[in-house]
Image 1 (cartoon, one colour):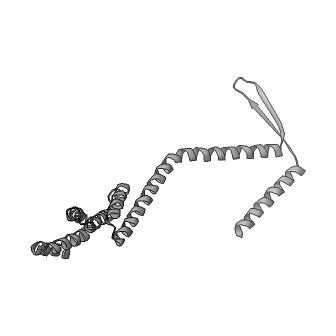
Image 2 (cartoon, helix red, strand yellow):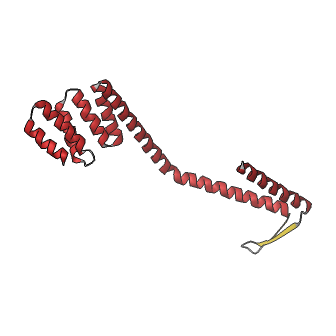
Length: 185
């Protein structure tokens, strides 16, 4: 509402200026001298000079906007591509988690690889890969993924927990005790 009132006020001011210029045309005389010493004289009305100045300002503004668009376009294209890649990666990650929940290890593993390629190995893709390998019966691959999770402090507990579950299933109590101590620390 306030914007509409401001716009109407601006239109009213411009209309008042135009009406005043129509009632008081005035004359403008400009004397110029070019490089070769030739004199130039421009006779016009104030209204024509104001319109000409407005057109020049409009052309300058449009030129600036075009220059700014061309200058920023490469960076915006790169950022749009990164954003699209990230969005597709997280979509593959969430679809992989759904596949895991439904028990489809092959699809979960494929989507984990896709998410990993798109997201450049964030910890979540490692978790998905480990759980998909475990669901698919590939204990060696799951162990490798869990061991790589242990290396990052933010996912170390998940890696230790996954390894602990594997060694308990295998009956390796000494290794399970070592991992439990590590998880506690």
